[in-house]
Length: 531
Image 1: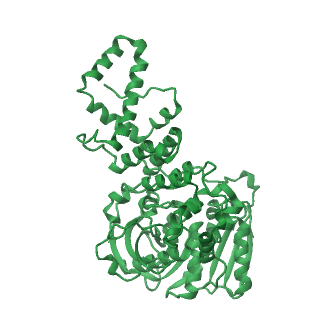
Image 2 (image 1 turned 180 degrees about the vertical axis):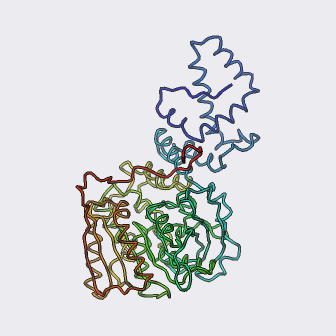
Image 3 (image 1 turned 90 degrees about the horizontal axis):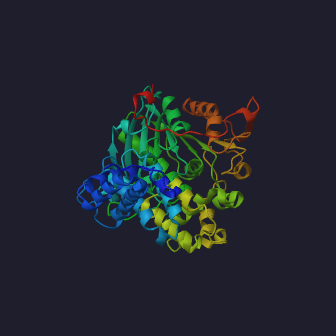
């Protein structure tokens, strides 16, 4: 008896039937119902009465859907063994969405859309959920290690699980970092190795890479996904240019529990804390791999651009030997001001703020930002460890945010504590900003640059704006500039004192350029896909 997939009248059934979980569950269901006399009778009935065949097949398809629900609420598959290619958490998280739609206050259609978004993200995982990957489990004695200490190293990660450029290698490390409040906390990072690295007198040059928003939970870690989240936008490019890339996941992403099993929250946009993660990841990598140079450049985009800027501010207060400079691309500087300018375009930032602020202000309540309906959705998102895609699905509707949330005392205190542009930097620093950025408004970046240049005129700050460039494409448009700038830092070329500004524009009319990314990297499963 086959699990055939006939087109049903309900579009939601059609969409969920296209997912990996549905098909896998249906396959196992087929083996479990072979001995069911009732279903055999149904099959015979459909064979002798073709006019009722649609009814029979719809019944069987709905049995497959029911199985998804039973997995979460019972032991229907207790003796079925495992489903090939699926982790237990794969099924459980999807079944949670479908089974808890009522408790979360979402429609069946939205629940199915969220489940599909989760399946898209799971298809990008390299080694299953972080909860099933032993690398992310914290050693028992980790709390005794000092900040910056190496806790664990996976020297040679299985590159076939990732979608890396040919002739690159990958390592993963766990290390001790510190929160904004100074508490010790474990975190993870990856190290991307070139085939033919450049050399410095003391070893291979290092780029500390800070990634943009990937989500707020453990499964949102770049070291956990096949394309390392930013793929050719920066990490692949840097490695192929001969640099060793050290990239922190940030606290709460990847390693999401400490040695005692206590959850670790991701303090989204707490730039000083993320800067700690960045410096400490570089130090831990240098400890793990003695052939790395002690000299390094820091670099980041979006959230990571804010991290890179925050790292330059940290360096001015707590100098680290070997620091050569910072590249901050499309940097977030003042998150409340940003959200108020762009509005609902960046609802995810508000959600992640609500989830992360309690790690800094324990008395803050998530309901200070989210309405009761929004709180329910965040609880569901947390339970299934959803990242950007499910967050977009869950929080695209009105009525989920408190109208006056930006005025909340803790929210205001968070921005004052974490803002970029109000403090001196350790230069040199290159700031790159697209003028058509719809997520990080150019006016906010310019305002932050102006503040630094006015208050600290000897800052060694270079500001480059890109005509017509949007958020992520700004990284591509300026690639030649930031690669040359990084090369100069490792060549010990002295950057000029003060602030310099320039503007780049395309030589051809911009309407004939590809404006946005319209692709993503997917693992090849057939030989002809890579020939």
